[in-house]
Image 1 (cartoon, one colour):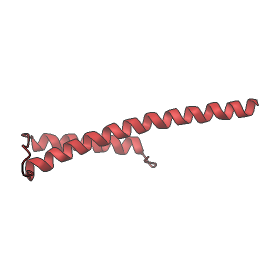
Image 2: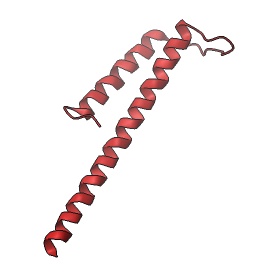
Image 3: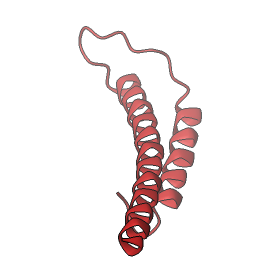
Image 4: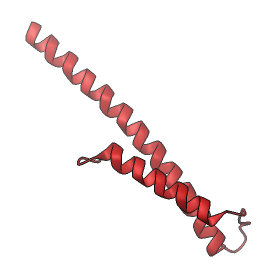
Length: 79
């Protein structure tokens, strides 16, 4: 029973770590999608949608930073 309890605890710890990593990756991906959408809307506005003014250089720099953070977080095994 001790082995089962240890295995269960290890599995729960692994699950919690994966959930935390998933949440971080999801947050980065959502930010990346928002920035990409803003860039696309400023370059090619959709009919009937008012595009917010975007500093393209700043948005691209932020996008590059978020992409780098996501790549670093994912490493060799993205979720």
